[in-house]
Image (tube, rainbow, N blue to C red; front, side, top):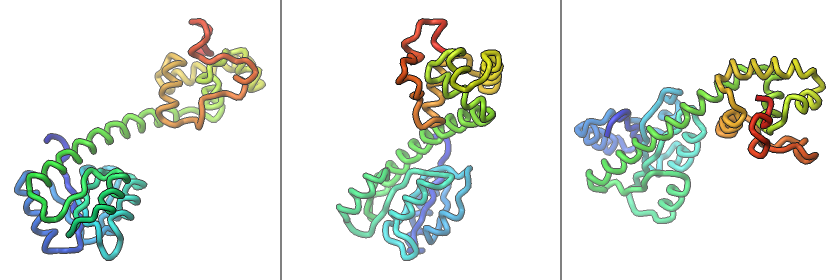
Length: 229
């Protein structure tokens, strides 16, 4: 297990919180204990990493509610639930909501540590994806409103003349916007722009309304005529 080794332990039972925190520290993990879900959520910032080991039943907030709020926060992290007794319906719900595991509090240490290892690996993978998407979105955020309009047509496979007609601007102006898009995003090809726009969720759909009137997609046009790029 390499990289981030932080485990956020959330449990209102202070004696259990102390015991499990000690166990995790003895196994080389960085532990951040919290006696309530609300305090844990309040502690989060964009740099928070690791995984969460949480009691399912807590007085201030259920583990399921905490899981939902965590997923919507600035720092979503994988969750492992602990419960004082077996709860099959609860375990099914937790796993459907994306929990890494659902364990009883008397689980053997080896099994708990294995689940934490899996959760930390998932956090690393998900953080990598979020970082990539954040970088893509940052590049697109540099574009002006008009450049976004041109880009929407570009990724739909429209050519300079078609874009100019659709936006009621001169072809030379389209070329200037095209150059600005290339410079600001660092992307030369329309195909790559379409891929990045899709990955980042930049547009709700890449289909341009004009396609219904016979405009071809970028993938179907001859090389050199595929788009404004």
